[in-house]
Image (cartoon, rainbow, N blue to C red):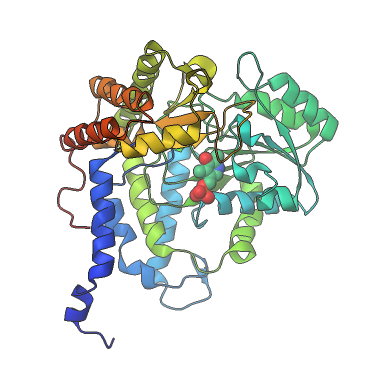
Length: 418
Ligand SMILES: *Cc1c(COP(=O)(O)O)cnc(C)c1O
């Protein structure tokens, strides 16, 4: 190393950015439904010296020397994942949820095979067959969606499509569907089509771990997930599967798709999985749900229509059409008011993906910060006031000052500089 310790400390440009991001996270209301705040233990594991280690392969089957601790680490993370979800096999190497899905698809499909996934504008994820994603380019994608009247998944149509298309894979799971998914109906549809059922529980993993959302593990051959949403781990992915699919999944993750696993992130996954095995994780997940229910009630009382009328989970999806604002305008106004969220398509949306008619709000991150139901009343007021002030920058700035003062009541990483 040629640079002295002094030089390292003098990287002012980088430090300003890192400190700026910490300040942003501290001073804003984080309502992106797919985000969370990891514990300091998880953060430390992610910043550990395991970032230096190459460990291509799997425990006791590596392509590099010096893997004795990497082996113990990965075995620990795998054991914890299997225990938490009651799975026969786990692979904790996928770098993200998308690569977990890619591994799952390639383990059971060949290019050109038919795939039946949820329409993205109805809540499905990009990787469930959208034309811009590898999943829509490599496989022949078909889509099911929600009913126009109830905005609940149209299970009859799903079964009909499954029988007609006979897809190799049916994928269940969504990014903006606020209701519990009936995995038994998916199993039935998959059986009728002779398809493999893959459940992508990226958004639900924390609630599934706590027993507050039905587990897909008994129903699906393969379950994929992220670690960083309600599960509150580092950014990353994992795959659970039945023993009969274990080798196919492992071979697809490495060497199929990835090179060396991110061992520091696997350390952070192990830390997060241990936290999820603790009894107080159930209290945390329960509070997320209570907070989401309270937020939903307050928004409905304030005259906002929610897709499906409410929520069973950690997020709500607001239909902004009756307010004559777009998702894009809503997201921008909230940003100015110190509230971070994202525009989102709603079922049968007529606006483009870059504009949308919806706004998605989640409570997982705010619940980690310590907000309870009464605090959600204030949060809902901030949100609705901001949405009523999209053209009034002065008012939005005033809300932002109130939001920052409010956030200071809920310290985030008090001991950290960045
Ligand atoms: C977030 C999400 C993913 C992908 O996660 P990345 O880590 O961003 O690749 C996959 N599926 C669903 C349903 C998701 O919500």
